[in-house]
Structures are given as structure tokens and as C-alpha cells.
Length: 450
Image (cartoon, rainbow, N blue to C red; front, side):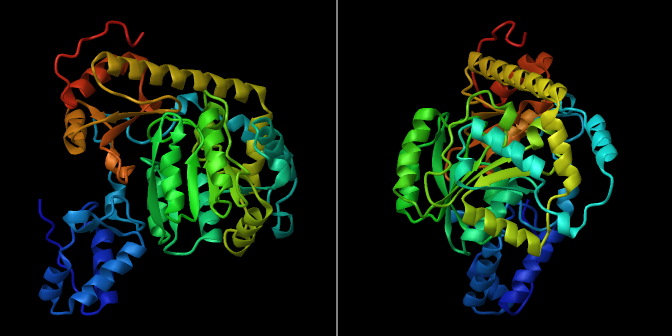
């Protein structure tokens, strides 16, 4: 369906504002094409350079993107609240495998820990006592050191989630126009954040062992100022940096010490493979671990270790803005990390996610469907036609995420999250995927979901 929203304005700022209004109101939905520069210039009676400047402004703010021969279009998730954001991604009557969220039934219960925090809170925390809680910092150092992160050479702080940490690190070190190496495909929020910051994402191919060495070498030779690497449970493919790959990447990064290296270990305690860290390979580095997946998305806490300069910049910027992460949340994390019952719950969740993911991957492969999912809660399926595959699955009762949200130059695919999947549904889902992606003659492997 063609987009009928009429862009208005005489100057570049007015035209850009008009496009933003269309995005905000939903009149210009995600992926909507914008008129070619000369076409819109003729319609508005302005110089093509004026429209080009407006489009450039919108690109720098991450609202639109250049789609090659397809011209300019609205980004899939532009950084502006839209009425469309209120639309539920999974249509009624479908099983939602698109969200990337953990299974609520596998999360530790917050109530008992919050009650203990409340009982121990004798007074409100004021500005003077703000900042990272010492008891949390001590636990962070202990836990990260056990995983081989060189916390002895740097500092530790706390942010409001992994994406908050990454944003603060990028803005502390980079300037608009700088290039950032990211896995391709990679976490959709990261691609959107980089665009919103006026930075340029440079794709690095990724396999089951992490970013490829030739890919990262090409990105470094191309002048990237930073590289973001997912340690384990790569979203969306499930890859994890292996020890051999980590050693090769460390050698490469050691030869490019000015590149900021950010590691995202969002799966943390849910990861089924040991950590192979890159931390400390260069001068500027940061290792980020979120608590959202193992303990609950509403715990907006991530812990971060890094070189002293990077951590100091992040903390200094926080003091000028948000101030600090709530000490109530920090104390809750401490309670959960010290609770053996919580540790047992997280261990069971790790086993259950692994069982669901492996069973689904096996069921898909038994039907002739290529699937990736070495670790984590996601399964990636390469497809020839994303819109057709997602639409066909939706008609069969399954909501999955289109790969376009996660890709730069890599091939199309769909992402399915096992957080909302039950073992009894695996065979039915695998049959639906095989039918939706056009696998012909796939044989049913009895009992794959048992």
C-alpha cells in the first residue's frame, strides 16, 4: 500500500520536522519509503539540496536510512515514540516468539528479596550516599574475576541496563560520524542506538564461534573507532565466542589499541558455555553484564568493568544526568546473588532454555530446515523471503521476528525466542516453519519434542 502522507515545508528543518511528525503520528510507518529527493523538491518547490539536507538530518538522528537502490525509508524502529509503538507485535491468537523476552515462569520471584531489602533499609539514601553500592561492587569483582575478566586492572560501576552502559561508553569515546564495528546480524537495539547517536554501524560477519577474524580485521582497517562483541548467547543467532576465536581476536585488537572494545555478556548466568573474554586487549575496554535475562527485565541493572578512564567518563556523565542507579535495585541484585535458592532457580532456567532451544533446532533440521542456536534463548533460521515467511507463520499461529531488524548486509532470516515456547509445541512449530519457508518433502522425526 503506498504511503499517502504529504510531507510539507520550505526549509530543510521544516521538511525534517514534517517527516518526523509523520513518523510520530504513524502516518509514515516503519519501512515506509520517502519520495526521491528531486521528486519531493519539485513537489515542494524547493532546491534538491534543501531536501537532501533534510534527509541527511533525519539520517543523522536515526529516523530514516538509505536503502540502496530503494532510496530512503523510515527505519524499522526510529528513535521517536509513535502511535504504532502501542500496537502489540504478536496478533491475538498467536504464540509470541518474537519478543526476545525470558519466560516469566523461569524467573526468580522478587517478592521475598524485596522484603528483605525493605527490612534492611533504615533510612532513605541521599545524594551524598549515591553511586555504586560497595557490597555490589565487591560481588561484581569476585564474579567477574572468576570468569577471567581483568577487573584488577580497571574499575567497576553500575548502569541502568546493558544498552544504557553501551550508550554511555559510545558517547564518552566517540563523536557523530565515527564508525562502530558490530556483528552482522546483531541485537536490533544496538543497530538503532548507533543510528540514533549519529554513528555508523559497520557489519562484521558472525558464526557460531563469534565475530570472524577476517571480518573484524576488515572493519579495523576501515577505521572503526569501537567494536561491540556479544560474549555468549548472541542475539539473534545463538553464537558464543570460543576460546580459540577469543585468542585470535585479542591478537587482532592488541594491534589496534585505540579501538574501544565493548563486550556484552547479557546472558550471564544463563550461558551454557564458559566465558572467553576479550577484556583488556586494548587500552580502552569495557565488559558489561546485565541481570535482565536471568533475574528479570524489570531489574534495570547492568554491572560494568573497564579501564579506569572509560569508567570515570561514564560515571562523570551519569552524575550530570540520571545521577545513579537506584540503590534499592542494587541491593536487590545483591540479595539475589547471595541467595542459594535464586541460584538454583537460574540454574534450572539455564537447563530448560537449553532443552527447548536444542530440541527446536533438532526438530527443524530433521525437517530439512537450516537453524542456528548454539547458546541462549534464540534460534535463527535463514530464509529466502522474510516477509513471506513471517506472514505464513503468523497465519499458522506463530509470531516471529523478521531478520531485517537485526541485519546490515547479511542474508535474510527469522528469529524465534524459546522463552515463550513449550516443549509440547515444538513439533507443531517445526512443521509450521518447514511449510512456511518452502521446505519440500521434509520428513517428520517422531518424538523430537519429548
